[in-house]
Image 1 (spheres, rainbow, N blue to C red):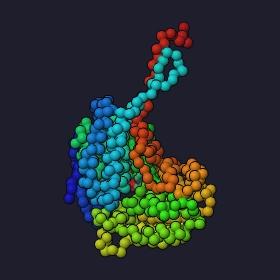
Image 2 (cartoon, protein in one colour):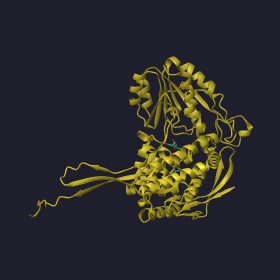
Image 3 (cartoon, helix red, strand yellow):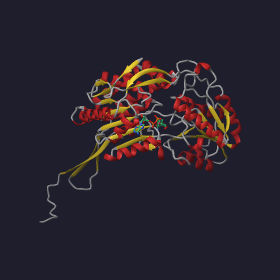
Image 4 (cartoon, rainbow, N blue to C red):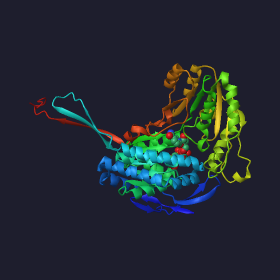
Length: 491
Ligand code: NAD
């Protein structure tokens, strides 16, 4: 079994308390690694190291081109160790190894993008209304960043935070989810190999209620970047108020996928499946809420049913597997609970709604892909984030009605719609209140475009140029060259 430590101030260390956590393979319920389990004390040490490295170390003043070179070097190392990283990610999350390979390529690209962007951020000279003066805007690294990532896309979500923070000249304390730390630990090893100065990258392992809470509360942390659930996000907002630290929050989603009757039918069905079933639906942007216009409703539901019934559920390392397990026994119980609620609410269960019958999958946390039809706007399975392989389908008649229904949610992460009508494309893409709107697609995102939510889906943006700007402060430097006194007071 693998044994892993935390990385604080350039040293691999055990938890102060000596405690450890066992990491479980969700595909069979067996232990795969034992990792250090940090506490508030360990988080404090890591914060102190990051503070020292920011206030007195070379990193914030290292030329941006050199910072970018190191971030790109890390991208090269991720590419070199792609297969090992992909296998670790699948072991830890249960997702298919093919999906993890795709993630690793994406992650290398993220480090390369932000490494390349590091020296592209020039300042700006603005027009000053005061004679004989100059006014300059410069961007500076924000400082020590606490970074907290979730279990669903462990390294991908960590990379959205690590890459821009390091490129901007910040120092970081990364806390991966306590159940999926393996790839973040491996990338920390690669960061050490790449040669980041001591204290710039720290990785503390342990529960959110201790390590995450300390990062959120600490007066020595300047920015907290968090991806996870809304309830945890709200706790972090409160905890962060002590020193009014900056916040970047990527919270959950319940993402409508609207199919108008004039859509390309086959493509819309195909993409609807892609929009949900990667990583067994444990995706913040899953298009798990599908709304279909009257004329094609029955045919669309039938075709969804046909395709969903054919999805191959299995162990992530089996090449035939299309969909792996859920992350944990607790999460499986939560999804099962939602399916029971959906049935009680009167939604029509067409397939799934149970664990697989295959005895070979008994030890893992598997759940069959599930389809509910005839759902209503106010059902809990429609409004709440199930975070599993569960689709709900609603019927609608008019454009006005569907836009109003799609917007009637506390979430605002992403939405998609399918139509061939160019006028409707203009109207609906502006009317939907979500951070990302896909037209004739679903779930496509890339490094160059900002990602983040309206409403309770979060604060700020990750990825794109804006993802780098989150890690900077803007300073206005005003210089007066006027030698005439003002003579306003006491002349
Ligand atoms: P979670 O909120 O339970 O945990 C996320 C992280 O927060 C973990 O590292 C956890 O240890 C930590 N944490 C828990 N309590 C904390 C506290 N009191 N203070 C500080 N940190 C604490 O979320 P999860 O179950 O790991 O992830 C699933 C959620 O993440 C879903 O809601 C999903 O939509 C969301 N998510 C959002 C995005 C996005 O881009 N918007 C991306 C991925 C996941």
